[in-house]
Image (cartoon, rainbow, N blue to C red; front, side, top):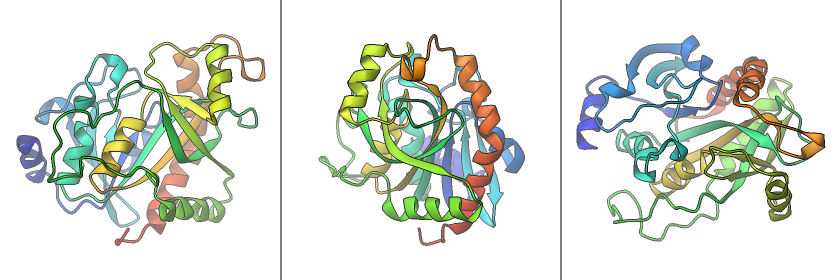
Length: 269
């Protein structure tokens, strides 16, 4: 990690906000990127193997703020251990970044949600069977037993709502449930998740959010609803191409939303 931080410090400085861009949402980095660093050039970073994830770190400037974007993440289901999945988050914190925006594409459990809706995450349910903080604790970054009562920062959620209002975008607010994947959920599992209080289900974000909160970062989570989950509103078979297609439909709205949020985040956030 020291080598990864040293390498990035030699290439970038003064970053205000980090953003993890989920499936089909990487166009923000294409549009605003000034410097692109492939993951395989950064000590400790891994390769993303999923279609739609370019696998590079992109430095950009949005609304006068320096933003570091992960153009694609890597996942637990790709065979990476949690320490690798969450490694970039720890590096961002060591670079001095205090605010992170985590985005993803996920399936709707809530029957009122429609494909291409944007949902601000208010809380999450971890059903991945693993906590990324298991193992020896790095006391220099966070406490052994961190509080998780407000992982998703309320001030940032309020900024997101204000931003949506400013640009006349309707957003949902709800609970994100994370499973391991890579298989999609069965209709029976979706019924169980709805009973537990989940609004959407995906295969990422939660490990990153836990680690970011642990090491003192302010977290905002945003989901692009890519489809109705299995059995919801008569939904039949699911495909990853559908996820990408819906994210592409929503990308203009998503980009506009992210830019407005960044505009409204003060340097103190």
